[in-house]
Length: 208
Image 1 (cartoon, rainbow, N blue to C red):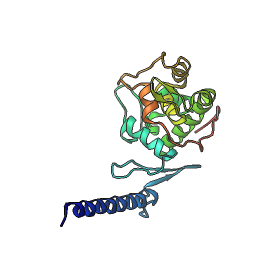
Image 2 (tube, helix red, strand yellow):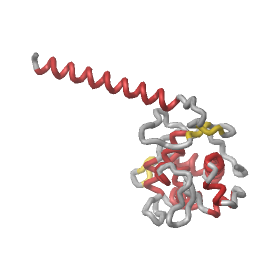
Image 3 (cartoon, one colour):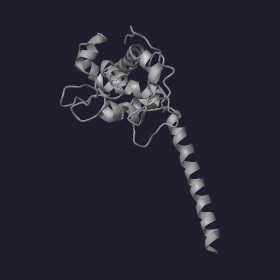
Image 4 (cartoon, one colour):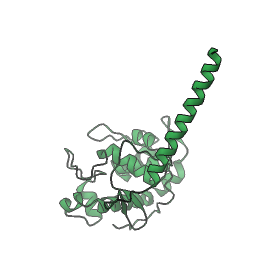
């Protein structure tokens, strides 16, 4: 067989294998389990996977993909974890933020996945309201070479608080923030860019 023919067959096989993998993963990602312990938690307006798995990824860059990506960065998707600074759960909430949503029993919070999911949605809504003007004025621009997107802004707000994100954006990147583990606003703006969060409605009074 000529080398050119072998190369053509090799490329066709790679395309077939890649297509098969995409179809398989897509079927897993969009189909909830039918077992008695569902892999999905039903919220008021969103379905949430109970856990994140390294074998599943999301083909659509929607809110579910966004929150699971943030969760994996924060805690590897573990609901019961508490880090060395006392931040709690899958999304690593601080106690002050939880109190904003009238959540005071941290042990109950750690044991209640749906409460954690609702708290994350509520925080995104509040941060989207606080940063609504900055999203409008900076989305699509670049600061220090980093593309500014709505999802990046909301992820950065989860890391540092909306006030610090405002300072960063309005100072054109001069006012910087990094947490105790070295994660920065700029790194979150870059890592979590270009997710579609249009279904998250800005709400100053969002509740859990």
